[in-house]
Length: 286
Image 1: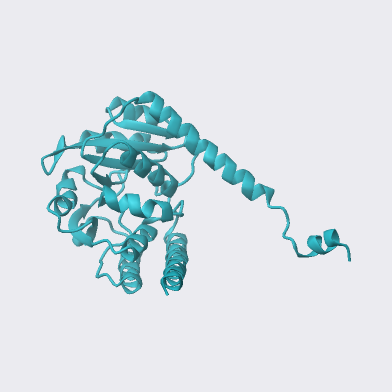
Image 2: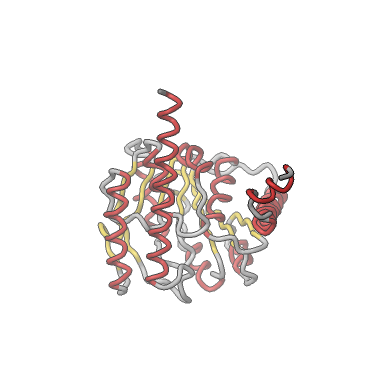
């Protein structure tokens, strides 16, 4: 059998679609990054940056930005809104309220928006990064609670906990899921955590610099961040907060069963990847 024929028998099909999608994603991210740098040349961010990914949140974003404090733990804070496509007026609302605004030309997913925001915050001098939702479920006035332990050097990464605080929502299935997956991640990470799916979080920028190259998930990425940070040895803490119902509209995360299945998938994939990395490091060191 000729070499070319043998090669055709064992070679996978040319996955041009996958490569095309990857190239388009890179183009979208590069376009958004360049536009941000052009809009804010020579930008130097204050010590605390609050990252808000926003997809079709024109109706909800304004009140969130209006409630922003001027300082957190005595440090200046600014909002950084990453508009994840959508085509509504979310970007106009963000600029109206004076938020630093980065606009993706297409919807890439919350995880991709976060990764871009982390990169911008790291590159422009932030010391602490807070993440919160654009839908009104998180109270910006409670940022002191998250950032305080970081400023005092007590921990490296703080997760807000509605389990330790007050949850004003009424979805019993979502509450049960929060508790179930917190226990599961506790087993996976060896951490005692009560609310691992909460997107209201605060990081020392060194944590983000370390874990950013290892983040892959475009959706349901909260578990990935916890597992990756824990595997890297960063100290993780929690603080009680008040969890509010979504101000208006519907969640972009899907129904409870779909969300639960996807969240479980992310846990499994990230845990497996972490174990492989550890084994590879042990082999190299041995």
